[in-house]
Image 1 (tube, rainbow, N blue to C red):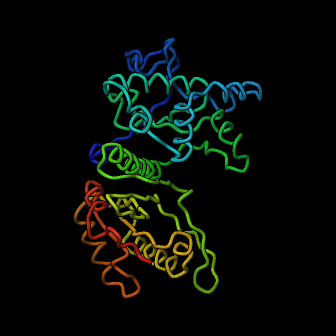
Image 2 (image 1 turned 180 degrees about the horizontal axis):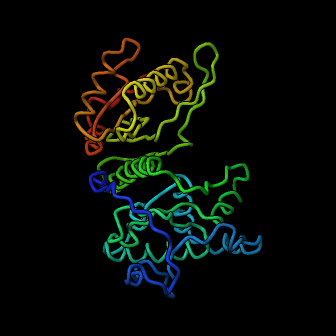
Image 3 (image 1 turned 120 degrees about the vertical axis):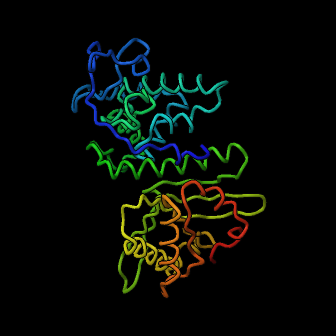
Length: 320
């Protein structure tokens, strides 16, 4: 999804689900928002449509490999748009139109069984159609995921704040861009891990227990070089002192040595920020801090992600 960050819209509209057969401001809900039998995709009221154990086992046996992969992706990232899911799992079709159509059909079927469900918020406005849906794990999907991992936390049921949702979708944009670039041969993506699986627990100063929380951990390769990255996606909503405190935590984690013991190196820390002004401000602030090694950090805009990762100066330059 090269340039996916450029296409992100910050226009978010709150809309209540419309029961099948009703209208919105005099217009019937569009066909792209309906299942194959004409039902509107909308979240069921909480507590309705509980799935029995027998039905859950049947669902587990009925899911295709791709449907299972869709559920896992939504579970891993927390929230994904229809566009994200099309890029991740519906890329091997003759045309983009066919991919979009099949993607909508599969997501509608999963929503009917409450395996995934759309948020009430939609990204990009109503004219974006079903592509504007943001999906999360539904009640049945949550139980399916916990069949294989009973200790996994339950999926969140609360509607997320706009701030939280915007950040999570921006992180998914980065992961999709890396994935699509890998398919096209621009780089090799060996691993991409979102939070909380990307988090690192460690012992900091004075035996304090800390948790480092990268937005993404990624391992990429170009030619003979393999690079490890902690990726932070900044939406310019936090102050520079807050970002510098996060940089200081990365330094403490590096001094702990746990990452180097496990993998033999310490990843670069890549900050992705909205614009060049933010790049200059954060880069200058890091360079001025005597307790930060500015060679550990890279700061660039979202649109320069691939340029940063493929830059020859970073290859083989991970900290030991």
